[in-house]
Image (cartoon, rainbow, N blue to C red):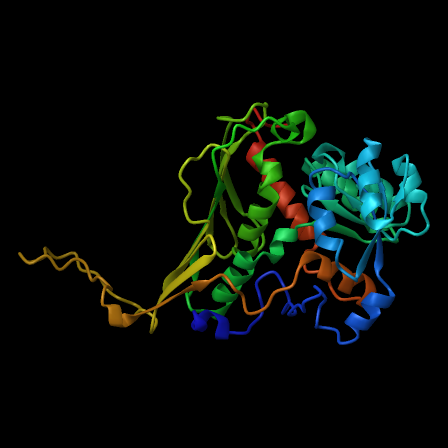
Length: 382
């Protein structure tokens, strides 16, 4: 699939992200590697559960640019398990974690309904804060947190870590290359059939697919359709999960570019569709698992063409099919973008080198606004 990978250009939603070396450090700033080993960002994690221990620990635990310094969890044994691995301090309360002078960056990895209060407290304590998605469960609470962030000395980061996933980066590169022409449809699919029974199926805990996978997939769609949803339509259902929050989401967005984003997030689908299909006036890109397929016209279609109201002859010539294989370029290959970074590399570059963080708080707010509108007037409205 060399045609995809040969192109180098700005990635939609990012500003020419750097390559990464084998240590997960950015190569954009040349002294970063040496400085990283001398001056790691010291992290305190609140919430040592499925995300804090199972994901965030794995993401930063081996990076020389970060040091897991302290932790707090309502279940003390969980924080102790982290301490056994990294020699970190176990705090008996969140207040004690915030008061720890060694910590620069608080990571809030608790249940969704607690994110705003804990993130706001971290900012008021003078820390930088990474808040797990969703940044908030309602737009009102989101705006409340953003007001705190605007006055804080520390930085607030929404953990839209999947902005840096290979499929999104590759799709953005292809769209920006112009090979597909003007994009009119983006189809995004996430799902499987799961009879889920944990807190993420409960409205009272901030559960539901809109607040679980929604922040990731909606963010992808917004980045590929102009950044703002001017029109929003949604259908939410509870089909297979054990709680009272939606487990099936159909969401249509239309952005300022006219691109329609068709999103389906489901815990009740037994046959998987391709995760990504992006259609433009010259061709389309599909991404299914680890395989990407790109098909586009060698030359732009002729414009304009004209139509006639006259009665056609006995030979039906109403259709002018562009079926000649010689007119098309087909490329198939692994999902490997030309340039790729990750969430934590960008956090480090922002805190230590002053680079612009690619996920803005305004972009994160727009995701929450879409979720708010999608739930409005449904049984799943908070």
